[in-house]
Image 1: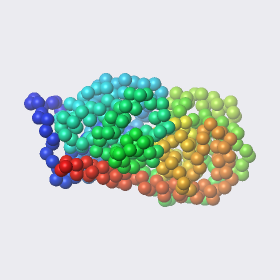
Image 2 (image 1 turned 30 degrees about the horizontal axis):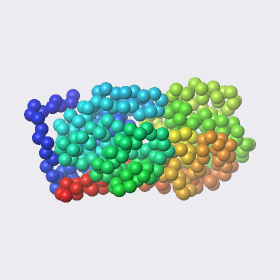
Image 3 (image 1 turned 180 degrees about the horizontal axis):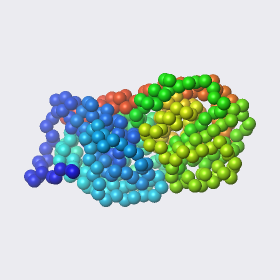
Image 4 (image 1 turned 135 degrees about the vertical axis):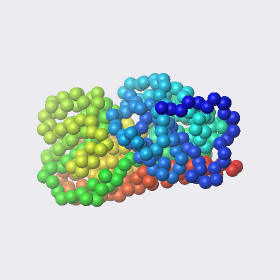
Length: 393
């Protein structure tokens, strides 16, 4: 049960100045608990006094993830009014409860994402109580190309009033520097629990199988582009080894995708349904290559998971993670989902050349080792230290 507000109204004073980072009180604001923030928060909790504010337990585009009751860090689920949005759009959390809860905890620093109501409430708290605000974002120039004038104004307003910004991908860092050229921007890509996946890569049997095993993981919506992948398989030329595709995930497009597979008479495509985080390593371990055909993802955490497990990556150019994980490395190949013939040729190249699969898989795992929760937490701690030094100015 959440604590009640103190009876006496708080004074509008800055919390006592911390002498060290261990004395700093931090609140991390997020929409919902998810694999991409839970592991980071667990790591941060080992170094600082951090409390997570989750606006809700789940969201319209959230998946039914299961977490232990004891997450490993202090947290509150705020609740309150939510404007639910259709498809893959982010819900609006309009409740001012966050402001009241911040007053109770009196953090020195608030770390918030989402250029929406929660971040404005966080900024308002920092103004009244002379605290510091750090904003994180994975928005890219592509994902934010159709922003309305008030959405753009909100970004520029907040970015001009922060201690620093944390970009959750390389393209996101470029976007933040575009919006706020003078802001301090730190690059801290998304992360999750990579230990079991890196372990798979270390013990992976790299010998050639009788077939190339492809894997795709994600919510089955139009935006994920799985239909392009299925049609690319149908267009693929004859290869030395047959190709098998496993699709992990559920969503509103599942029935249509199953019908497409049936109409194209693709016998080596199977649907595994939704699989929680604990069950995913076995799917990554049984695959050789990972295809991410998204039509638009600010990041794409599944691509990081696949890289950690040592899978060759075939990644859409419309994902923030593609530049971070593939980029100029040897970890995979990049494609535009609308060009299905090119995707078909890339998959065929992997089916015909097992050495290429090994080369890409090993390179991908090496890149993923730089994005463990411990490494990403170090960058957040740098941002917190920067804010701490501002207290004495």
